[in-house]
Image (cartoon, rainbow, N blue to C red):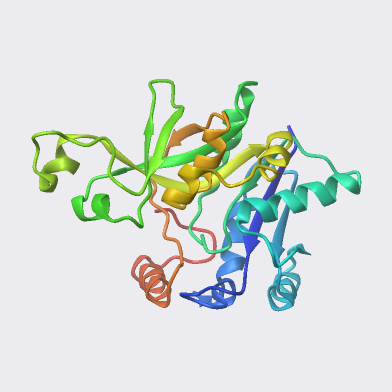
Length: 260
């Protein structure tokens, strides 16, 4: 199986402009992501997909590979679709593409392997991750996307609201009374499926929740969800970067030798 890891990395960000180039532990955030994703056993290729020359230059400086992509993409998935399409036109084809955002410096190779393994099942076309939510405050936050699955590990729905609703139970007790799961936003796609997804128009559920995976589900695509016990720390704000830096210092993490 030929696996391509794509790292979408935009410079523009409302809450934290230039975050892929922000320094963490002495190196840019995007380099942390590159080093973690390229540690995946069996990986065929990896590329940083960006719309900014500064990011492309930084990636080249540490020996990575970058591809300049359109600045009009609505999501990282659309940017990944462009990469797959262009590489295919050049004669480079892949079975699976894994999308790891350029602000996920603590992604684990074992998480990516778990996603890749899903495609040993010929029926899997999309796979993603979930992790248990045990804190009620985190459960109630709309910034934490929740996922509900069936008994076979297929997603039933993603929402910013806690699902299911617990009738007759105080909301303060929800997290201890039911196993809720947070969606970890790393995706893997069959490349043939990815090429189809980027052609779909926005859907009503997607617009309502501002979650692109609902567009796929509304169009009949199934999403396999794998549990991970590692809660990644994404860098969305300067405060997140400070927290990540503190985590590195506290745990004496050097280079790639860490786990969450």
